[in-house]
Length: 247
Length: 108
Image 1 (tube, rainbow over the protein chains, first blue to last red):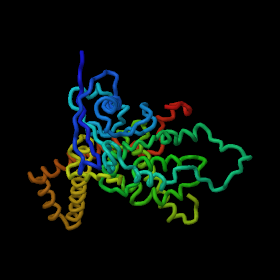
Image 2: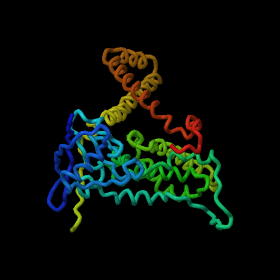
Image 3: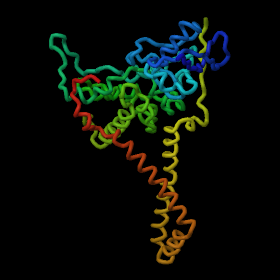
């Protein structure tokens, strides 16, 4: 039986459109297709002008994040069969400017990400001849979950604070800061604290928890942020009660 | 070709579109009633300090239909607040022992 499925896609072509508008496409339904396959079908057979980002088709590259029926999803991770009994509404990720069609401008995120210094910072430079930085499995376990972030930005689209306050550093960047703070090889916690423990950092989070619900890699940024709140509050007290003591 | 990124404003009723955000907003609203009940307790302490007559008056006000209704509303909101908050708090705990069951080198 030939079945069709209808996709309602938010289009915005800056050279012809003054504002975004929905365009409807009807495509064949396949049981094993994800939304990304549907978009690729449109691009190849129906309308070559449709723009969207994608790369790996396997929830690793983090490129194809979009709003699918109002929920932040990876298009490669959302099966058509889960939405087949109605029109599937596809929009670019919330809380980001639209560059074109489903493509968002992510410059703000890139700046926030680099502001938390998401890399191992060491106090003393080690010579290459001194060998590798060893880490026990238990030390790895402390932060491994937070290394799985693919920067897909679904958490930014789901977090209402990101929409209401554009200076909020946001879930993914704060989770990555937490990942490096927990790393036994790292000494950069104090350097990151200027951004992480600021009003625009963890304290802007009101613990909605949406970031963790939509995260396709189960990173749980909400947990990272709440744990950072506790650690930052303890550091604040230690600094005042025990001046001079290293955190 | 010059760029012209389009910025979408967050709508006033943004939280009405999804159950998750409604649950969150109601949880935030409950704080108001928890705060009101705390104020009531402080008022009770003040009345107690003012002596027997003031305290009896406070108790009478509490047992009036309006007083009972207020306390029931506060109880409902406090229960909602507690249930949703305790569902979330494990996330804030720095140690998650459940995670330790997994082998550290497994990559999933």
